[in-house]
Length: 108
Image (cartoon, rainbow, N blue to C red; front, top):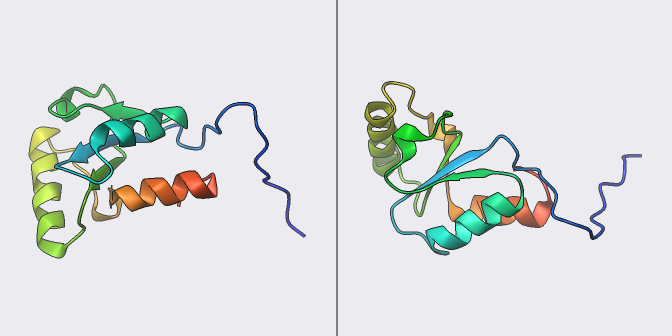
């Protein structure tokens, strides 16, 4: 069974529509490359320093390493910077998440 979700040419799929990304710190690949991938697939990229002024709540924060202590710090910083909106632990992802989502053609 199952339907074909086959790729075909003619423009990038917009499977990141509704995703609002912000990059926390240095990443590999670098933020400008993540921005290109995000925007090419319908997402919104919030530049460094602007996450409190995004006009819409962040849905994901990309950080190079997802470690318990680092995640807690990021969650706290986002809560302060966004006036209490913040982000949850599951919204903190690595650059690999974006790359794998692009390869799969859907959000993972």
